[in-house]
Length: 441
Image 1 (cartoon, rainbow, N blue to C red):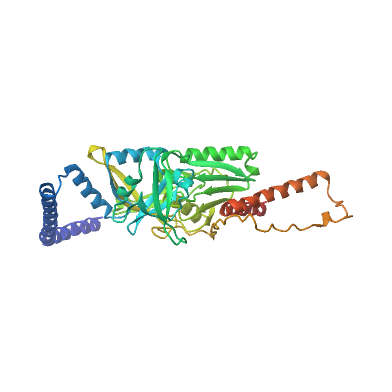
Image 2: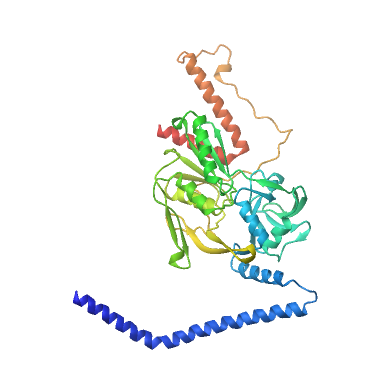
């Protein structure tokens, strides 16, 4: 015991000597850094006063300071920004699920505004805006050189008013205009439906309504199919979902996991790092899951797909996701404004960061480009079967009930085949779940 005490004392003495020897230079360096910061702040004050006194037109001091703060934040990364009191109020409304606008999630890339994803059923979606589109002009005015917030402000306007955006799209040679009528955006976070024996959960955003909507939608689907035993599986459709609230992404992941890590965030210091684990309970009761993603799936969508993929709880189908692997914290400021600051990166359970890389699907399935219908195209030839031949023998091995069941299964298969023309990726996911169900039985 005395040896340990002596070692401790020696360590303290050694530490005291080292501190004494190096405290001087370290303090001097820190003092120099502080002096440099104050010099730069003096420089800012000098520039600010010169603008106020000598700019060709009188400027508003508050606007100047807000612009300086926004410039400081936006220089860090595409997702850090200053929120004016009005912008901060709009953001609070958006996370509750109802707001006015076009219905697109955007980011900035190479000076232009890039569409992360149009939201289902919104004016932008109806008008034909697609994930990956670059917006170069708004009502004829170029956006190159503008900040993201300035461009977003240009796209805002009264409900019912028209806006024309000029879009550059991969695969289309020339830029083209899209006319959109602004409207109040009312988002249903999760829409559920039954396709055959599969429950499809279309998750459009992660707001306060997401987990409650998902839970109730899943319950309704199970009830419609007559119980969990009749369910082949579940499709969680995260395509063109730009993300949203981190806590909702965690709840949705936890809904299908019994244990294990969901996501970890790592900030600048260890105090800013967190690790979130799943709690017991699987709403799907072990049924197979397919998660659909594409280039418009970002942020919270990537947390969910990454967690379920790493735990082998779901098969991820589609195309590579957007790759937004950073966490933004909204910090209230004076005068009811706020700052959105990137404070951490997030990692999937296996420890991989998807920042700028995205989630790679287990099975790559691209959505085919919809071709225009040619009215003069020849119809697919209809082949005759044995049953169509004159005098064909009857099948004597089936009862009438068995024959009826076969016909019903054939009709269901033909109905499912129609979905491939409307949504090939979703049809693929449903077919996959049907096959997994057959194997399981």
